[in-house]
Length: 341
Image (tube, rainbow, N blue to C red; front, side, top):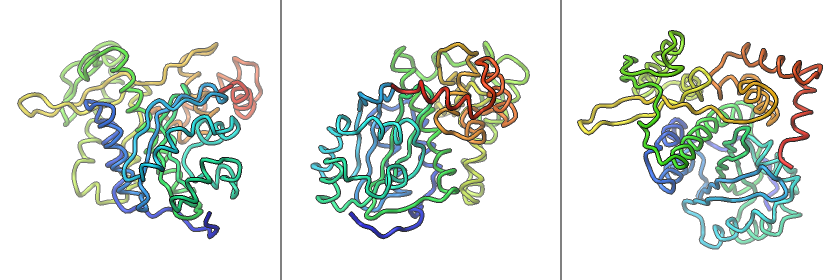
């Protein structure tokens, strides 16, 4: 394994293309994963390929890989990864798939991260891999999508890099939830839509919670922001500013997805897509507390759910109070002890 420590992986392309691919949910699963990986490879690849896995980490003792996809990997490298789930110790599952967000394996597991894992040693020796960057797109359901970039040597990631790619991961997680939702119900994108908008924010249809005046205003504002992100002038600016305009959800409830009519007319479809988790708190308290238990900051939770930071803080305070716990830290410790067996 390489031992030289380097800085952030160099970003070579626009990260918004990964976000756009995450919402291309009218594609088959293989094609969807391929589009997301194409964007990741363009942004962060080092010529060693990239790979992703859809996983279930609800039981850390039995990590399950449900779908593996790759671009540019040596076939033997891909074969080693596909059988690697059973070789990952529960403690490593928690550090990477459960509590991991965005960073390298050497950061998560230490500089000798590969010593206790025969598969990692084989990959390092056989394919020149000295580290790997992981972008963990997950939510409190613990059914996520890990995007991985093999690296030639050990690297560290800055706070700014982690913040940017954690936001990108929020959209991949949202797209993954939408795909599971459509697959489970055999729906099309338009089926079950709570709102339909023109790109300029004009509301064509609204039902259920989308009929509320505040919701209609939030959806219109989000549609206009997304339309601005299609212009070169806006996208040419700082990537972090552009990513910040595209929240993970609108109003804590909806993802906006592009849909093209047969005549070529472009619409934005608002589908309910907040994580569905159960427990002894309100749904919003469970969602906010669940993200906090994963190690996400209030700022990141605000972005993921499309809520203000003050609203996030209020829900965390209420959740702690309901469970008779004195603080956010105590709430997180309590929830983490029960998160993934």
